[in-house]
Length: 401
Image (cartoon, rainbow, N blue to C red; front, side, top):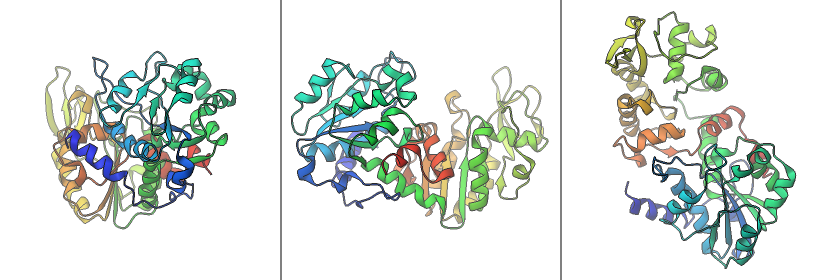
């Protein structure tokens, strides 16, 4: 989809024929009257933790585009929008590349300061409708991570209202997510509202339902896979966690990545669990071959599922009324995306309701050639999405209540 089409879609979204409250009952920005918004400084906790290329330029605009509707909604109603966000894990990283990416969609000022005089002066000088992006919250990561109340109070002094639009970080009990909304009138943004509305259905999906779950460590996916096995007709394990399933079933996995903790027998023996029947394997010399899972050798590293596994999933996808997918099928960062792409093609043709999440998954799909609008709801969260599906809420959502 072109940048122009994304911009048009963002504007369309900002015209809002939206429900007034989120599915979790917390208030949304659409509950605030235009008169209350005009001239007020609104702190928007955005989810703009985006990847950068080797030149320091934002390489994936998915989260940037999804942040635009809330920013536009507030700006068009005369609010003074103050964006708070983090990027990366290095406190030396700045939000300058994020500001540059945002400027393709909305006028935004960037201030390389967070708690100092420059930030205070900039937020006080804002005119109605203007937008400012402050510096990386992780400049003060120890305080942010600890949920420090004094840090939250300093952030609160920069605004009159608070809006959480960072679903991707809502599973973290950080200061900007949990402590800050307790200090100001707090609301959900349009992105957060839409995420919760979509994911609520996944808690009790239309039947038959199919979940596809990938990831690197089985122990982190174990609870949600158990939940899905109770609520979904089929649950497919892909990515590195599929290696754990195969090993627990007694198959050799060679040099493949495996988790420290193996899946329990009641999981791998569950008839609802769909395990790979073939795999793309890479030798130590870098040659790739497709093999039946029973033929994986000591020198092989499993890097993706194979065509027979995709064929096994095809009728399940065709019959499903609800499909949830979180995690690529293979090592996409090493170029193994063919069978993720094939799976996306099948899912795009399904009439089922679809939710797809996880930054890695979205990154693969954006380059797959499959029309994103045919893939249903694309979530900005990976870990947040799975934790919400496991618990039905998140710390930052509770903080809005």
